[in-house]
Length: 400
Image 1 (cartoon, rainbow, N blue to C red):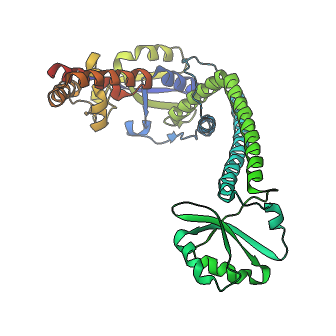
Image 2 (cartoon, rainbow, N blue to C red):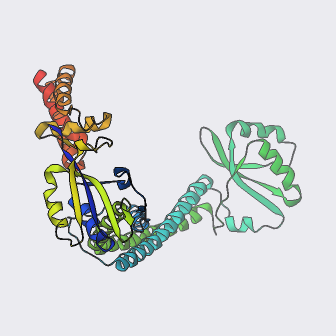
């Protein structure tokens, strides 16, 4: 229960072997690159590479497509597929075009469904109106307005009884509104519209459908049902595409992520002439495999020194805890890691937090339920907090 010992490693070699060095360091999982220029006093002639990560846009594009599909990548191992870069680009472009195309079709069908539903909802307020909507809209000398009036405004219509052009025909109503229609001669429509506007009339634009409102509703429901069928067919196409491509997609995503990691690591290298230097931090207890891989490269040399000797630098901190204490690294990491040479407080946090939680909560039944919930959170959602809730649920059960 302590902070893992860290070493600083500097690798020097010919530029043609930089990619192999970067790959070895990244694949090791224990190498944390740092700005190599700050480790040396004389850096004349050194040039930081800082090359752009050309794989990051491809990876982001693929992630966006996956999110757009509403799917999740299948869990894959760490197998290295070594797919050619051009093949990766072509696949991402093809998959992106396929997903975007299907997505646009889906959005268009959903837009139509919303329009059908909205039109049906509006027409339902005018059922019982035994008129052909299409014929009304084609009238040359009369203008028609469908909409709704607040109840207060409807009651005020009586004050316009002397005006022969202010005629409102209600169809349906509820606690707040009357839905209906008013007509006006073309030459008087401006004045009539002004009066109804003052009465807070809200106009509704109905679909130009043939037949009565009831007949129009039936036609719209049939069209919406047909549209729902198209949506179901399109969803099957999306599911088929995902099922067919999920394995290849997972492989391409893994390769792009790997290449992006290599590109990010490569940025930290510095060049001088035809040589490079790359400096970073490694976990002392796990560096043997990485060093043996570097030993196989002809022009590569390296130095490894304990982090304590690099007094002017702050090594990264890796906590090392076992068993029941390890989940409580979540709290230590959240509130602030200790410095490299400081004591790891994880064990103290685990013990005091669990005991105090048990004393304050102190209930047998709820403690057991809390442990089960925590176990489920970790088992099915992989939530770090879930592992902490297991001992935190046992403690109140004991105190209870």
